[in-house]
Amino acid sequence: MAGHSHWASIRHKKGVVDARRGKLFSKLAKHITVAARNGGGNPADNLRLRYAIDDAKAESMPKDSIERAIKKGTGELEGAALEELVYEGIGPGGVSIMLDLLTDNRNRTSSEIRSIFEHRGGNLGKTGSVSWKFERKGILVFPCRLIGEERLYEAAIEAGAENIAVEEDQYIVTSKPADFDAARGVLQNLLEGLRPKPDKKKGEEEGGSVFTRAELGRIPINTIMVDPAKAPALLDLLNELEEHDDVQHVYCDFELPEEAVKGSGP
Image (tube, rainbow, N blue to C red):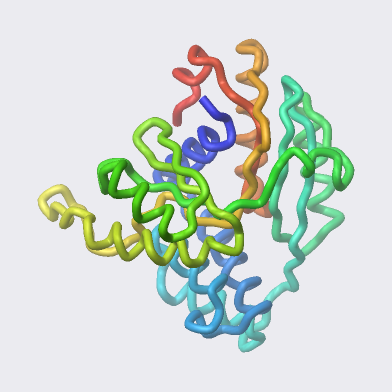
C-alpha cells in the first residue's frame, strides 16, 4: 500500500467525519484567503481561488464563511497576514515528510512543528533535506464506481494525464503541473455527467465535488516499506501534524505492510 496516497485517503475520510468542523473550515478559509490575496477575488479569473472554493463547498463550508475569507484576501475585511511555508522532516522508520503550511506567525509554527516531530520520534529537517525525493504533480482522486477503467484511460490520456492508478476503491490520476487545469476540467465535466443521481431517501444531496482530492501536490519518486513495529508511531506523528491548525497538506514516501494497513483506518 503506497503510503502517500493511503495517508491521503485516511486524511480525507477523517476530515469528512470529523466533528470538529471549525478546524477544517479554518484551514479551508486560509487557503481561500491566500488564493484571493495572490490572484484577486474573482474565481473566474483566478483558478487557484476557484479550486479553493470548490474544496470548501465539497466540505459544506457555509457560503458566508467563503465570502468572508475572500474579502480578507482582497483587503475588504481586516485579517492576519498569512505566510506560505514548506517544512521537511524525517519520521519513524526513516520516512520522508513534507508539509505545506499557512501561518500568521512563522516562529510559533516552527517551534510547534519541531516539537511534534521530536515528541513523536522524528526530526524536522532543513530546506532541501527531503524535497528532492518528491516531484510536483497534479493529483485527482475519485471513486472507481463513477467510471469504467477503459473509458477513463481514454479520456484522461487525451486530457494530458500522465498516470492512472487504482488504490482500494479509488482512481488516482496524476499529471504534470502545467496540464493539471486541463485534466481537471475534462474529467470533472465527464464525471459529473456520469455521477448517479442522489438518493434523497438516504439523505444524499445534490452538488459537491466529484473528486475526493484535487490538488497540485507532491508525489514521492520512490517509496520505502515501513517496519510494522514503526507504523503506529509514524501514523501518530502524521495524525498530529495533520491536526495542526497551520498544516494544509502532508506528503510522505512510505508503504505500509498489510498488517499495518488493516489497523490504520479511521
